[in-house]
Image (cartoon, rainbow, N blue to C red; front, side, top):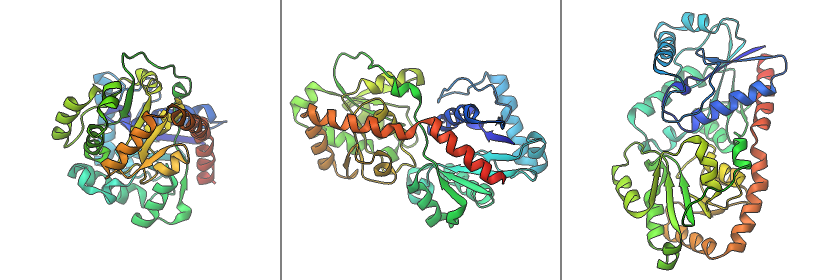
Length: 358
């Protein structure tokens, strides 16, 4: 059986989807037993994860984006030519056509375009709707990265339950083995793109309300690139926290492992990579009581209403003042993170693909 994974996210600026595809693709190749796992378009040599830039130099990037564009514009005949010999094509949301000679699958990462359209650009909303119409509704089978996302897809997209399977994403091995990076002052860490969905204004309100001695002893460190509609938030982030900007992937495990506490006040997530990574790095987590986050963290995090600065401040205060409680949560989180190994994800995914192939 030949499986081709759409890895075109490697060619553009992308965060969670690019991480998922990169680690999943490599894990699938390790797990494959007699099956061939290829990357589309002509991306079998993808060896470097960079969220801000293409994984390839300019000319190879342009060539591959040209192939993707040709398939999208000229239709299934071009896509079939590029997928020659493929039994299953796993499409991403940059693909606008469906193959005629291969079975079609896809991953649903989240449904914020349907649940919270106000936190997205109009172009993103159009792209997600197109992905639904052209790919999700026609797929032979679908993967949801959490049961919460699966239930959202059944409820909002009308997908039949038997067509969609929950397979939790994984955490890179580097987080399980991470040594804390050196910083001058203890810090509470947030990781993610600075955009409305991440709810950083509420976090900053909560942080500002902490007792002065806590804010004197601990930094609030925010790591991530600037995203859409974030000018006002970015001004506050630079004034009221230690803004680290985009942190290269190789430096992330040490940064996460060095945190006293990890805070994630997001309004909605499909899987929540940052909290799973923090748990793997043995760091206690505070996160929103919304979407998939209780499912992923289980009993290994302190939960808050993401719209309540006072509740967020109370949990931060409680944990920053209690090393024993932080240690307890960190131990629970480290054990919970073992559920999110890429090897397990790849094993379940290969079983999914074999089922689709019959």
